[in-house]
Length: 159
Image 1 (tube, rainbow, N blue to C red):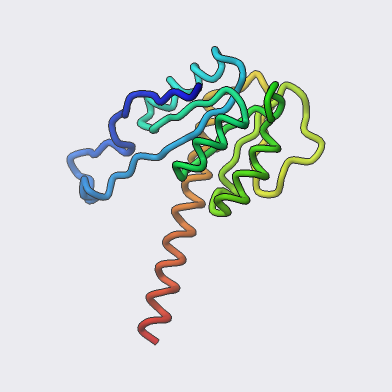
Image 2: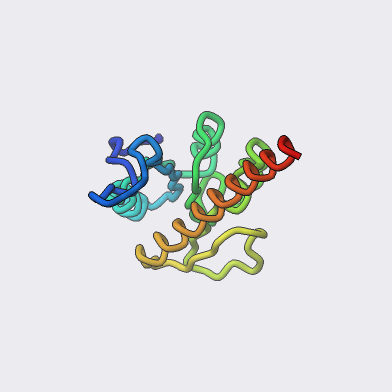
């Protein structure tokens, strides 16, 4: 069964001297997939406190249903789960939403022989600080790619 954490405040709290307008603040979304309820909940609570919109699933099948209905900024998934693991989810999710490439974080207590291209791999037990740092990198790369695409379109239209 999937559950969704309550919608947290927006990411990037504004300070008095910030130039960024409030309408430009963005809430990032993460799908957390793990059959370990305690770990899944701990990651979800930690990210929600940091302003992420969080959806959770206990296996790859549940997670794929969530991917069908929502485009996530990041997917954090265990590799080994009873009903369809993280590698299966990665293949299926990319077939449905190619834009998820480079947005997966795999977790396992065992080393992964060959992590999928562009994916992050973390060994359990996790460091939440390291996970958050990896997620910031994923978001920065995705946002940077969007900016480059917009600039490229602008140059093409003005040339």
